[in-house]
Image (tube, rainbow, N blue to C red; front, side, top):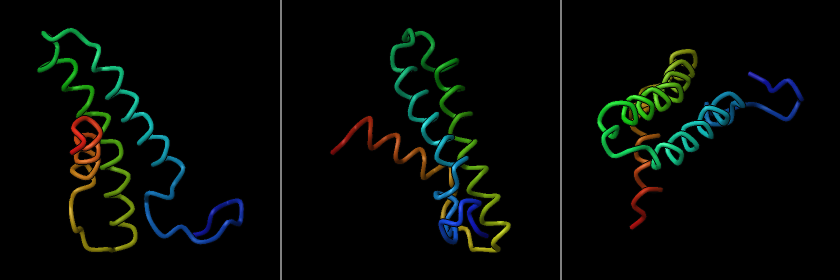
Length: 90
């Protein structure tokens, strides 16, 4: 698979523009939802965060299926781990 601008071969789903945009949206939703009321933590906030992460996970899954690569871990889990690291850097 080649990029349309002739910049080389795309080797990972993380290089896809759509994945980058989706990941930026995940991070933005995570930051914005921090300001939501506490009573929404387990309903609206949780649903928004989970659904936004699933977009990245679906892109990653589709990439692996198309490339017939083994699934080392679920894409959503990776996005979740990154979000957790940003929230609680150790």
